[in-house]
Image (tube, rainbow, N blue to C red):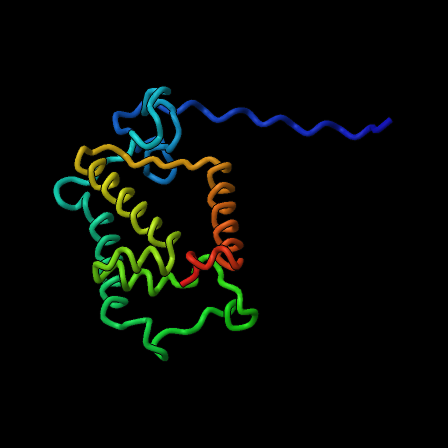
Length: 183
């Protein structure tokens, strides 16, 4: 048996007096992130943030659109069909096999210049991605205008499905009967 004395118990800290400021109780000076005395427990976390007011709330969708427009503008002016402007796909260079992204720059060039049939012929998967991005961006803009948060949670099975589609697309475009999908 151990005969050592038990350590003395420390008394609990005295209760804090109630404050009128919601930020006063936090050691950092900010309101706590989770439900607590400052927000009803049923309030979701995204509803506690203050949305930006006026045109500032459109900054993220506008910056994203500006970046995409600049990228497509560059690809539209610097033609990837002319050799020497862009690097060759490393998988294609080493093995001669087309990856799911092969032909994507040529597809983007054709898409940016308005030749949609050539864009589909160069890389149908990338062209579908451009259209999906445009739909996502439009949804983002509408939800921002309505002051609603954009909550996107993609279940893992969707990511596995996207990967499976990309894999099947890669395999089929490298087979003799899939030459229509090759750039």
